[in-house]
Length: 252
Image (cartoon, rainbow, N blue to C red; front, side):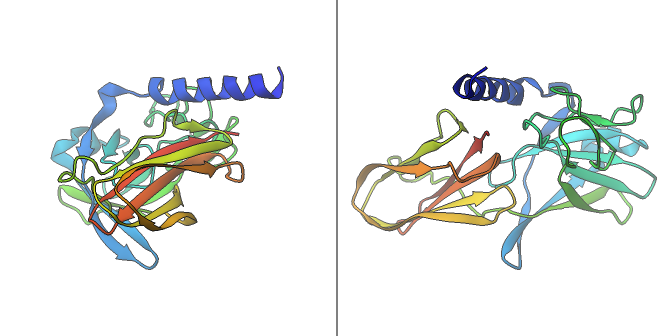
């Protein structure tokens, strides 16, 4: 298989796996975080009520929790109870091909990626398979009672603008990128525009735009050839009050 065919195959495979490798019966709804500044990043602090996730009242009960798109972190949170007083949490995004890892299975005693069978311990530590690295761990705080908190770094405090219909930041299509992409946005009125690219941990990668634009539609070419495989966030902030972010995935 030549390089171009291999790239196209990878694009199709990753796109299919991202949408196919989920478990709707175990994905128990969205929660919203409290955002808190922490050094140079923003923590998303999730309060999880055990009454909303009754399986977590059992030892080795395990669930996926999804959340709204204010985060620059992709995927869902896998939360597992490992004792009467301890919980662990990690990302469900397999570092190999970005598939969605299954919740803890008390038969295999692993978290397993359904795409290529990478295996991880209950806290996300790599065990075997093509992934080679562990899942991203998250801090869990449990002091007893019926709630626990999960801290995830790398959030961007952005909200979709609902007042100006012609302000927009278009979704990346396709959102699987290899070498090049285009940032497409529109402004309802003249103003300053800042467009910044972040990696999946909330680190600033590059400034795409920082200047004044007239009212209208725009397309800015963006080279992604220097980026490693993974999920990225493009964030726009304008002086007329518009803020939004869009995710895309780079595949090598």
